[in-house]
Length: 140
Image 1 (cartoon, one colour):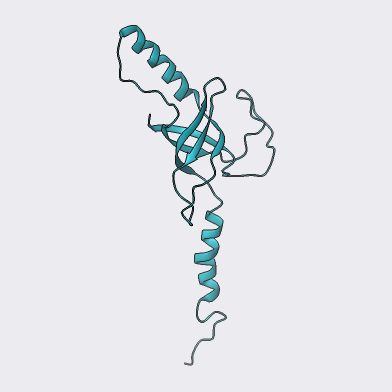
Image 2 (image 1 turned 90 degrees about the vertical axis):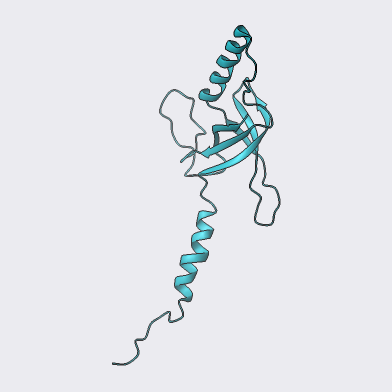
């Protein structure tokens, strides 16, 4: 039995797909990130967040803008602050500038979402860094 001939004997193509291409594709899929709140608009329930992971070249990433702050964060903060004031309890820290938060990214764009009904997608954008929301406050 002789040597088997292959189209890619040194796995050049296979390694390209397995290593380089996969990292390239995954770099554009955003799921979650950790960051620090740098601005907080309590009236509109949005904030700006500075991502804490550095870029590959050790530069800071661009801030995330118009990050949605869900009612599970701002309503809880408001409610507990009122309770603490009435009961003269100190120590509770709401989300604020410099809080460290976990950020998630919507599966699809939420440009046309009003908060109450089904909505038409504006684009084919998926798992984009342009569609962030606060998932959790890690350090108030």
